[in-house]
Length: 112
Length: 114
Image (cartoon, rainbow over all chains, first blue to last red; front, side, top):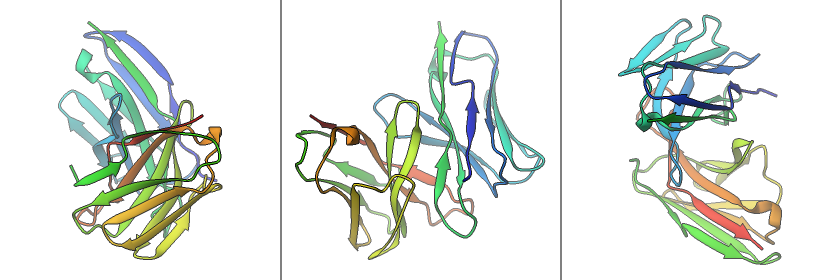
């Protein structure tokens, strides 16, 4: 069974600090997606990483896919209160299907 | 916004009653999904559909059934609701115009089973 483990589960930081969230698995994924979810809403796609070693930037957010495509990280520079939310990674669970699995999430709170 | 709506948005029901949640999409996507989200468990796949009348089970399918009689609607039914099915339910689609298996989600349905 493929699993995606995220760490940390909870993170509370001050505005302006940097942080990194990790998404790890023992399985290889063809791609991984990162989502952000705010209370009372559905997850919103931030980015997809596809190639081993790939780095993508979205303003102050930097996403990296591990060389072996088993892990990914999300780094936020100079966090702002608007970054508060639940961050989820996700990938296709089984090759040849479109069944997804999600990490358990990292709940981030950025204090002003 | 992938044109996904869910109804109802909130529902309170009693143990043992049947409940049907509806997911509606307007962009002709082939793949549709039902997830539940619970604290400490993230999003878990209940069922998904890969076409009209084509469905498959996810990791937490017990106690749930689905139907898809037309492309735009995917129904999730709890035949006899239990308190353990109290959760937030999300519908999603796999976007047909992307190369990277990206999903887009509806706004969710909060279900409480008393």
